[in-house]
Length: 248
Image (cartoon, rainbow, N blue to C red; front, top):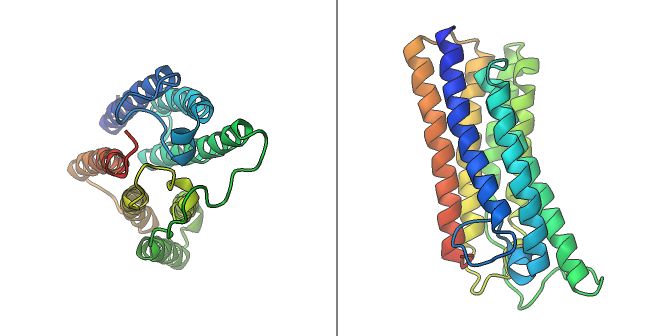
């Protein structure tokens, strides 16, 4: 077996097993709030047990399937495309879980639409620097890819980065997090920082693809472990910020 393929499969297995474990835990705690740091936690799931149950049932099952898919696809996709599939899957799961939680909260409120500013009015988190930074990365990557005639190779990555930008913009809306016991904006800031870090990693891979850089095996191993470190750090940062916000 090609050493690159073996390395990619080992990377995918580590990430896939992490997602499977996280998905199983989220699915199992859908009936119970009292597990610190486990489960899909935003304002609506904190306020409504129905929203908690439905969002975690979906996100748990979806995350488990994503982990299985990453492992299954690892022998056939390049590292770059495998990472793109992983990030696209996470982004879609987050967005759909948010929509499901909001709809469930509305049903709990006798069918009335969820208020745009539930509870006390809270100032929106200031995430402009993250939005500007991610937008600059996307524009720079597209400019370089067009100059080098490699736009088709990096278009998928640029699309994922654009979706991460959309999620960061979503976090600027107080209604996403303001139902925590004491809103401080830490969770929105932590999530935005994690997404900006992942966008930086995608930008790095996009440059490698656009410039058609030929990497030595040592650099391939280094980038593999770097991507693992960035992903684990982003997850850790998100969990810590959620805990600091009061979602535990």
